[in-house]
Amino acid sequence: MVRVKICGLTQVDDIRAAARVGADAIGLVFYEKSPRAVSIDQARKMLQALPPFVSSVGLFVNADSARVEQVLERCPLDILQFHGDETPEFCRRFGRPYLKVLRVSGETDLRRPLDDYGDAQGLLLDCAVPGQWGGSGQRFAWWRLPELGKPLILAGGLQADNIQEAVRIAQPYGVDVSSGVERSPGSKDHGKMAEFIARLQGL
Ligand SMILES: O=C(O)c1ccccc1NCC(=O)[C@H](O)[C@H](O)COP(=O)(O)O
Image 1 (cartoon, rainbow, N blue to C red):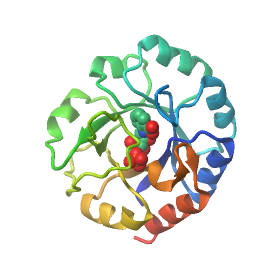
Image 2: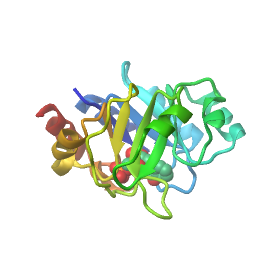
Image 3: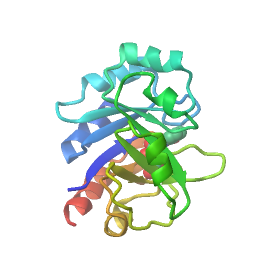
Image 4: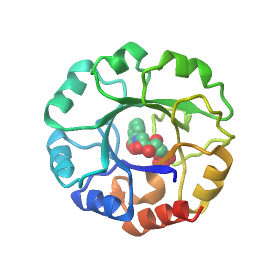
């Protein structure tokens, strides 16, 4: 079964619904310029509502170390996700499991980034959209991802109508979705989340 992370949640109800419909992980955006950004207080409340066996992922975009530390002091995140131009040294500085995001537009050689970010838990491939760091709702041209000994996670423009095709082509370890299961930025549509996961289970 392909693992699924639902990203960009901002409400306690949405966390509960994501867990109920079978998400393996939820993502909280700690990037102030995002319409899905959460404050530390908001994140704490949401994480308290997270049931066991669902992982929490915190997203950052070119944050400074002090900001990441400040979030970690108050929010029990399981995994960090770095969405900007963070170096491998920066990503490993916090001693936490992390995912590094690569913005791609089509078939890309992943060996170099895998060497550079060798201690990452995995690489997340998102669509490269000029002027945007993520959550764009845009997809890239999927290709069969190689077996390189590290989990590869597919993101970018996924939704119920294309998730089966995406997984058949790319065969990723996991998938990550945000705008494809929303009614508006930051507000998740519970029906769309359920349908997305049902289509994955139907593979
Ligand atoms: O969601 C945002 O607004 C965002 C802003 C800046 C960096 C990352 C951001 N989100 C990343 C993700 O949550 C998404 O899962 C990923 O980019 C795919 O998004 P989508 O194409 O909307 O499914």
